[in-house]
Amino acid sequence: MANREAIMRIAEANAKRTVTLPDGTRVPALGQGTWNIGDKPGSRQSEIAALRLGVELGMTLIDTAEMYGEGESERLVGEAIAGMRDRVFLVSKVYPHNSGRDRIAASCEASLKRLGTDRLDLYLLHWRGRVPLDEVAEGMERLKEQGKILRWGVSNFDVSDMRELFETPKGAGCALNQVLYHPGSRGIEYDLLPWQRERRLPTMAYCPLAQAGSLRKGLIDNETVRDIAADRNITPFQLLLAWCIRGGDVIAIPKASSENHVWANAEAGALMLTEEELRRLDSAFPPPTRKLPLDIV
Image (cartoon, rainbow, N blue to C red; front, top):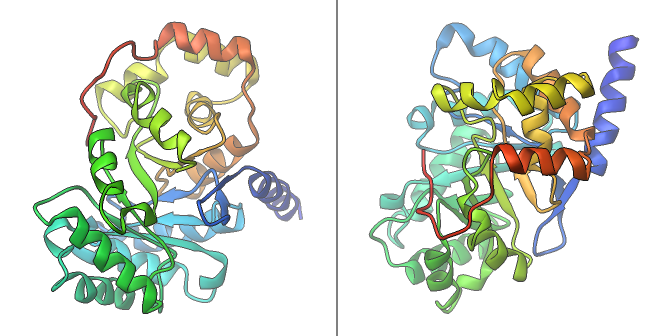
């Protein structure tokens, strides 16, 4: 009973913490990423259980891609959402070399088959390739007309790419841009985020916890981060997630391959940082004062 009550409490909090897409659809500010999920057969059942728990806790947006494990992540997600598809906002991404008019439909169909569904809620161009942007937008709009996808967007686009996309005949149909974003990578705040905010175009932040390695360690071991987390009786990871979604128009998609991590991530949805805490984090991780190259992992 205690677990059920906790699930309901956290799910209710996450249901209130949403981001609005251009068509008025509201999605949770905290979703679930699946990069590197599905790569290890021995972890499959625990990863499926983690995704299903995340949905129960209100993190109903799940992001995947045909690139992740060359389809293995999509297959795992498909198994995880079986029986609960209508509760999930499902996102996948197409390889740039599959985004041309003669390949995008087949690529989308393959993703749908692996995911065990008849439509994607959002389909993203994974990064910019050689296919002209007007052709990508045309293909995406055709998939919308066919009901295969409900919305489309892009990933790893800098502000110059976004401007060029929106100058194409159907480019304004883009619903979202997914980019790297966390306190140690704030370059998008200089020009990309303002440009998107002017157009009410949300951002999806991948690797909001800086994935792994020295940068992640530098974030969670930072004295300011640890002090604020200790004062709030939360983990540094939860603090970083709360920071990422603080503005109301950024969706964070942390990956969690265990149920314990899912619980911790989901609880961050209820955290609202104070102005003083944000000032302290700005001092520790200063916002950009000039144009920086777009960070990509």
